[in-house]
Image (tube, rainbow, N blue to C red; front, side, top):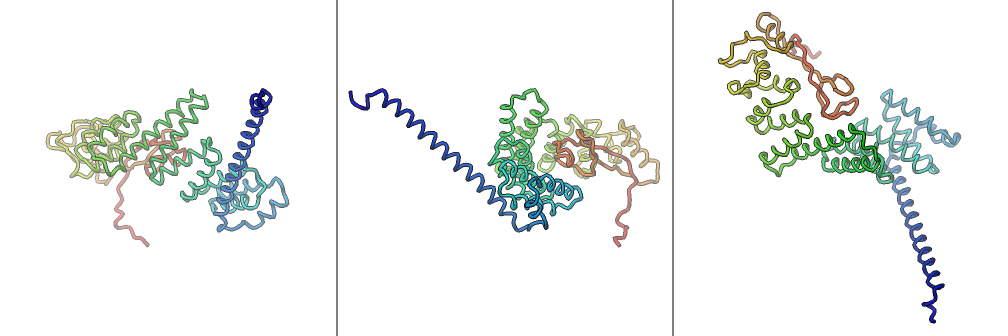
Amino acid sequence: MQWYQDPLFGIILVFVIIAIVGALDFIRNRIKERKRVNSLEDLKKSYEFLGIKDGVEEFLKLNKNAIPTLEFIANAYIQSGNIQEAIKIYTSILNASPSTSTQDKVHILYALGVVHFQSGFLQRAKNVFLEIVKNFPRNPEALFYLLRIYEKLNEYEKAIDVVDCLQEIYEQSGNLDDTKYFETLSHNRAYLESMCIFADEGSAFEDKVPKLEALKAIFPRLEKPILMYYRNYNLALFWQKAQEARNIENLLDVLWHCPKSEVPLESLTNQKIIEIYRAREQTHISYESNKQECAKFELETLRLLRAYSHFSVDLHFEYRCSECKGIFPLENQRCPTCNALLSFDVLCSVRESKDEIRYSLL
């Protein structure tokens, strides 16, 4: 019997192959870990121009558990609005603590990315969160910030990819009972897809309309931004869809500020929209002048004051988030406080008009 037919040789060969595979896998993991550490070091070096906060290095040398204290100080700076000092502290921790574990460094990087995001340094924030995701791909907090950054940078395709990653994490977590989280992801996807359609200059407007209407059916809150898009490109379609709108109340600010030349009074059939222009003293001859009452209190108050008072009045608009109930003077796609998407409801009040043209700037 030849040596290669010996059963003992086969067993030895199997063990040798297993040992080689194990050694190669160990080497591969070591190389991957080395690359991960090097990438974190490279990112740290990119912040060296900010300088080192006085005393931070010395404090880190004297106290082995100094990081929580420094984080507390950085948060205090953030609360007081001194973002630059907070950035210096976080950068100092990264540069002065070579022995810190990768996970602790990622924690500091996350805090640094949040500070950059809050202060408007979107590109730096993106680099930080990409580095975190590179080392820890299943980090939903970092992915949510990446989603918001891509959205602000108008990189909607990349933002959709982030939504897909979050969707995969959600499905694999087994927490499928969290319907609100699932709806949030689906609404974000619908919103981002609508933004992609808005930005697509290669497609005809007529081809975009069916896609936008399908997205509006998925996420009804898209109705307002889609109508605003129609208004810019097809005024007739805007008025057609506005009269079919589910929530005229939330379009009050848009309809109120429409120039008179854009309002097709003869073709309006929606009574809620007609009331808006009756209160604005803009009616067609077929309407019974301005004597007919308005159902909405603010519009009726405005109509009566304009008809029977010498006061010059107008509607004033504010926007309330349906999630956190915060009130803001301007409308945003996301709530500045709770980050809820398209959550603003329109609030209106009657106020005296001021002749601001005559105000002195001195």
